[in-house]
Image (tube, rainbow, N blue to C red; front, top):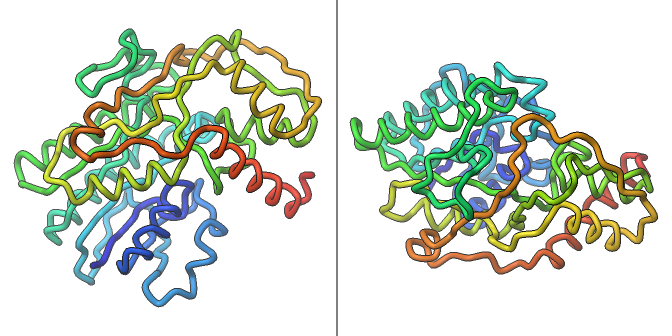
Length: 315
C-alpha cells in the first residue's frame, strides 16, 4: 500500500509517516517546509519505503505511482505561524485541499482531511460535539486558519457526494508531544521553553480559560483507525480531560523544576475561552479513546524539549 502525506515533515505528519512505515506502507512525504522540519523525518530518509517530495500542495502535482491513501495535513497550525503566513494558510486549506482531493479522485484512493477544533471558534456549546456549527469571526485575524479549514471540510464532503471519493475528516483538538516546534506560540511549547530556561511563563488572559490536551500517539491511533472505516462525517479526536491554563502552567513549571514567574498578558482577539471535545462519536465509530494521561505525556514531551534545547544551544 502506498500512502501520500501532505505536511509529512510537520509535527503530526511526521508521526504519521512513522506509523504508516511501521504498518508496511510505502510513504511519500510531501512538504514545502514553510513550517515543517527536516529533522522530524531525518531518521526515515534511508528507509527503502520512504521518500520526500518538496512541493507546495497548493500547486498542482502529478504522482505517477499508484496511491492508495492521501492524507492532507499540510498547513501552518500555530497562531504565530498562520498569522505570519496568512495567505499561504488560506491557500493550503482551499487550493491544497482541492489539489489533494483531485489526486485521491484520480487514483481512487482513500482521502483523509486534518480539520481542527478551531472550526468551532469561541464556542457557545460545551463540550463541543460534531453537530455544533461553531461561533467563528469570519474576518478576524484567526479566520485565515478557521475559515480555511471550514472550507476544506465543505470541499471534502462535496467530493464525497459528487465524485464518491472515500473521504474521512477529523477535527483535531490540542495535541502535543515530541517534534513540536520550540516556542511556536502554542501553549505547550511556550510553557516548556520558558520553564526550562527559567524565563517568565506567559499566560494570555487571566488563565481561567480551559484546554484539553491529547498526546500525539493517541491522535495517530485514532487517525489510522478512521482511515479504514466506512464513515464520512467529521469525528472529534482529542482528550476530554480539561484543565485551566493557569493549572497547566503550574503543572509544567513543577515538572521542569523551574522557578519561573508566571506573568499575565492581554488575551488575543477571538481566543476561545473553552475547548473540550465530546468524543462519543469516536468511541462509537472507532472504539477509540485516549490512553496516555497528561502527566505521562508531559514527561515524555519535556524530555524531548530538554534534549533539543540542549542540542541547539538554547539551554
